[in-house]
Every structure is written in C-alpha cells, then in structure tokens.
Length: 281
Image (cartoon, rainbow, N blue to C red):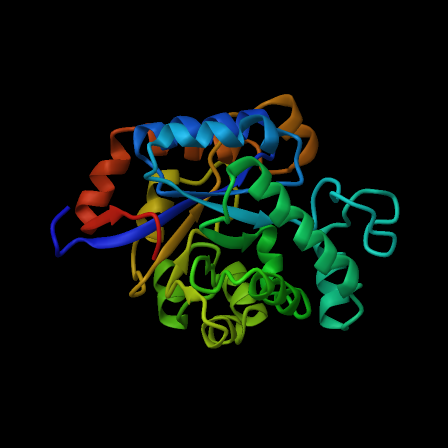
C-alpha cells in the first residue's frame, strides 16, 4: 500500500445471522476482500462460527452488530419482546422517537450481547455498530455509551457513525433517501461519542436498495466515491441458505455482493479509486 492510497474500512454486516451468511463472510475474509465484520451475538451461529474468524490472520476488525430488531434476545425482555422475539425496526424506531423504549431492558440486553461477544472472542470487540443502525437511536445510544464506559472501553473500541455529508450522499446517488433518513436519526451521535472518548469514523457509505436487478459493480463504484477522511463502507455479502430466506427479505442481493467481492473486478475497482482496505478508520 502506497502512502497516497485512501484507507477504507469495508465492513460486512450480519456475521452470525445464518450459517450461509457467516460462511460467505469467512470466505471473503480469507481472500482479503474484507477488512471488518460485525457479529450478531444473539444468533445461534455466533458461538458456533465466531472462533473461525481467527483464520483471517488478525487482519480483520471484528465488532458487535447490536441487534434489537431481529431474532430473539439473550434474556427476558417483557416489554420490548414479550413473545421472546424482537419487534421490527418500525416499532423500535417509533418507540425511540416517542421516548417510550424500555431502556432498562435494552441496557441489560446490550450487556448480554457484549458478554456473548467476549465469551467467544475472549476480548472486547474492536468496534460497535447496529443492525439497521439501532445503536444511534435516541435512548439506545445513551445506554450503549454507558455500557461501554462502565467497562472502561473508551480507548479500545471505536463506534460506527452511519451519517455522512450531504454532498457525498448526493454524489453517490444510491439509496440517497435511506442515507438521508439515517443521517437525521444519527444527528449528534458522532459528536457525543467523541466527547465520551471514543474514536468514530468520518464518512459512511454502502446504503443499498437491495434490488436484485441493480448493477452491483456500479453500486460499489459509487460506495467508494466521495469518501470522507476516515471512511467506512458497509456491505452485506453471504451465501444464501434456507434460514436466510426465512429470516430476512434480503436474499439475492447478498449472493450478488458475495460474487462481486470475490471476483477480479473488486480489486480492480479499489485500484482505480486509489483505495486500500484497513481494519479501523
């Protein structure tokens, strides 16, 4: 890597979601086509496959993908998940904006998911982000920062800020409405995290329409355009399996991202963009 190359964290979200998704991420990590992945520690595949991330040779940043909108919590949450299953994002977002979330329950679940990470990895996560960006929602962000501060992790863990500059979002022209919505929801998150002593990325892309008819290569070209000074690009690769089709509406786009990232076209794009993969921003 030459000094002039822009270092970019390319993070595969959703490790642990299913076996197929997890093994797809493992395949790409072994090829050196990813520099980070974030794990859903509430999913049964996390304890089964989390230790296999060591095969990346230490080149991979491994984080917690805080999950409050998919699957089952690791402990009882009688108000948020009375039936033992997390509600969907619309319900959680509405409750957050109306300040009606059971924050005591959420704080306890954050602790459980962090503990589940440590049980498998034997150490703190390198970073924290959230499934569907729930970690930046009002109330949740405060409980997350409190949990991390209580562990003394401010100098060890970096936090993902899923917002970006308006000009960068407009230039990419991919899922701009989604990117703008998350930018609004994340208002103040980066500043609050930095004030608490956490490192935070500057620049974020990878929002997808999850349309199987889109040109995946063209979308990745856009993701790596208009990068911020310490950028993160998220992605969602994976091998499709029956469990994925049951759990998540994003199926075929994962396979297309998997194929693109494993192809010779991806390193060619990085070279054209003057980008090199790094494990932290």
